[in-house]
View 1 (tube, rainbow, N blue to C red):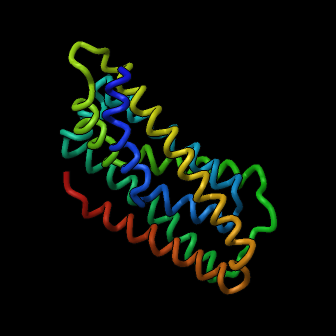
View 2 (view 1 turned 90 degrees about the vertical axis):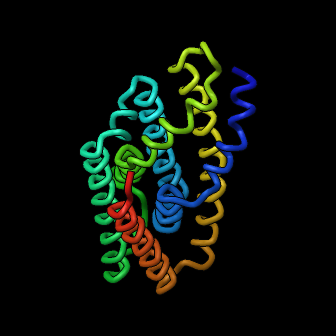
Length: 204
């Protein structure tokens, strides 16, 4: 198992630092709601990663990856979530809304946004089905190996996104005030909409 994790480590690190939906969500939450909200978004995303890891081990992810109907359903659900979040960010930027504090409702929303976007991402299903088996030693328990690799990925994600959240929060306090905050919000919203549209066009 130790050799498996050492072999998987460079791949996991590359996956972590590659920008994607989670990166945009963390930046958006850190800029608008602060570090705590960004970390809650990260926590939701990592639970979603673990869900897909377990699903891959028991064969559910393979079904989603292999079935055109299942893949399309998850894909469209994920695209809808991204489009709605992107449009909300764009409208929020235009309405000049600025949160003075982060309530329990906003904290729950931050966590849910990370969780829902991860679970509704069919590319995670394809990733776990296509990549994980290549690192599982012959004869090793699939569920245990999948969970260990997923936990490694989660740890790297937590470290990486915590750094991003801290940096963006500091930058937000220093620079993102008034029109700059609205521009940052619109930029994140545009990126989420673009990612949602790209997901609609994604093929298996």
